[in-house]
Length: 169
Image (cartoon, rainbow, N blue to C red; front, side, top):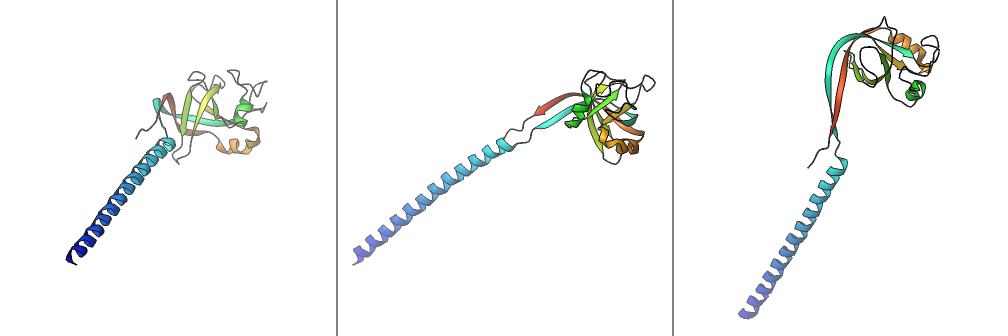
């Protein structure tokens, strides 16, 4: 009787050890799978960081104008000084501006103390008497918004090279 009880206890102990080993193995594989899935998900959804060099920052007079309005532009209201169809660019959602103190294609960051800001690409020129100004291009449909903008003294940064950094895990 004693041997039968010992044998029964050994079988139970063996089954218990086998079951615990099975659970540990399952847990290990599930955990490894979950870890690799999390790593893969992080790599897929990792938001790249854009680092932009600021070449200069000054306070300048900034105004707004409506592209396509002959009263605010020259005889070709939809063609910017660099030849771009500025009406189409603004309609497509690109931020454009006019300035005389930087070359065409330069990106500017215009910031107000309220937190409002806009990044725009210089594609147009102003009258020569406005050598230090920036004129933000707005659609013709936003005539009142451009008037309300008026002329403001804002921080204008001349942006340099953009570097995109992808996070790695």
